[in-house]
Amino acid sequence: MTTAYIVEVVRTPVGRRGGGLAEIHPADLASYAITALIDRSGVDPALVDDVILGCIDNVGPQAGCIARTAWLAAGFPTHVPGVTLDRQCGSSQQSVHFAAQAVMSGTADLIVAGGVQNMSMIPMGTAAALGPQLRLDDDPFVGSEGWRARYGDQPVSQFHGAEEIARRWDISREEMEKFALESHRRAIAATDEGRFDGEIAPIRNITKDEGPRRDTSLERMAGLAPLREGGRLTAALASQISDGASAVLVASERAVKEYGLRPLVKVRELAVVGSDPILMLTGPIPASRRVLERAGLRIDDIGVAEINEAFASVVLAWQRELGGDLDRVNVNGGAIALGHPIGASGTRLMTTLISEMRRTGSQFGLQSMCEGGGQANATILELVD
Image 1 (cartoon, helix red, strand yellow):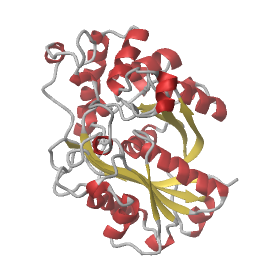
Image 2 (cartoon, rainbow, N blue to C red; image 1 turned 60 degrees about the vertical axis):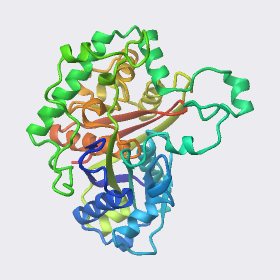
Image 3 (tube, rainbow, N blue to C red; image 1 turned 180 degrees about the vertical axis):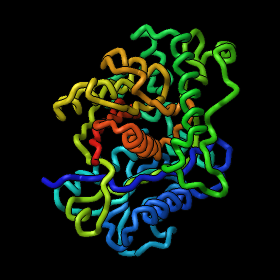
């Protein structure tokens, strides 16, 4: 089995809801990231075997296989196909898994993997809202007899899951607020120090992520109303609704040698798991355990980790179970500060993870994302000197 390498990474800045990227057509947003990726890598786009993009709510301007549309909108060769996938928040991380698996199997040599989401233009849940419902609520499963036979009328909501995680792991609001404030502090420090400059392709004069808040404080967070009556979570403890695109180029050993590419990292191990769909957001815990076991590594072997900050409770519960050092987790801030353009977040995190691995010389990096339906991807990357 051949090795899968990542030879180039890029992302757009992450835009706030209604911010600088809000009016950019999603196909153009994705094509911008893909074009920057191809330009930076120096590869002939005609050599690409496939384009795999994650995107959720594939309606309106995000419909019609946006992976294919974005590639063509970039002006690249017609013979290169594209496929769009939905594994909820982990969609673009899954795109890397599929790309790496194709390379490892020997059936592909060069694949563009990434994701895109314009949440300002297509609000989260738009696809579900377009379908017939038995009652007006947020639950798209209410009409399924099989689902109700198995899970009854339990709420299917990420907010319910995040609250329940905080309760079960006894994570206080104050602890989560300190975590959220640190996310903003780290993101601002990384921005000011230029750590993101090499991974961001500026777009329409937007050069930096729009999410980090310099004016936030524990006092301001403490004054926010909870998302649910009597709950611990507030808007400050959740990821931001965002717009953005990101992409990585996955290459085989043969492609690296033949085209003179310089690998950044190799894909050491992959895992994906299912978890409780009602609790929903605990998947990174078993996914991380599985990928570490498959790689023959311990959590202490991981120099830097990216665990998506869907909610503060998700990462803190992960840390309680895995025992990882939070000084090595989301060291440049996470989705609470930087934002969470859901279809693009997987490769946004991976782009930042790889950049940090190379900046610090960390041999191993771990990434995991909680996902709708109770799932999680986990990836271990190994630095290539």
